[in-house]
Image (cartoon, rainbow, N blue to C red):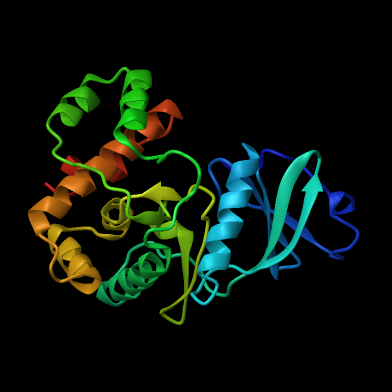
Length: 254
């Protein structure tokens, strides 16, 4: 987590003048800096496709509350983007008003990205999950996986990582949803399940969330997606040597 590529102001493209540079702990895979308290600099550590995908998604949903691309350049041999910095801060715990706003955002986002795709595989599919579980060497995850009943669909482009710290609120109103670098083609209910996993504290909260997103959703079917999302991110965190207790479905909701 945090800074992987150390830079100074002198490393910033001279076409974009700034006077201050601050490191952050944001991002698990990419490097993030705050520039002049008004901009966000994101350095993509992994591949070209992440920046390509994020830019494509942001252009698709530019009318929604998402970051605006200000400048693109190369820094120390890596792709980088400067975004405008939204006002507000991320939540620690969401209430019903916050759940309404994020459910509405995701519904609008999915309406825009429905039937659209990337020329890459679905990053959250069962094959990838199976590989994560094998890497984790965790018997608990293996048993959990065998009891799952989820058939993932390809509905369109999803965010995939809409944890509560990837959104900001100002005066209790959603001001920005960000970090679309792991977006891919996938199942909309998986996308919503990640929100349920991170933003909801109880099953009743999940009921509220799905009611705002789509009243016709069956709770029991959706909970299987939440279990899948939980297992996916638990296994992922173990492979990254990170704690997963806060997103373990059975510890959080049972």
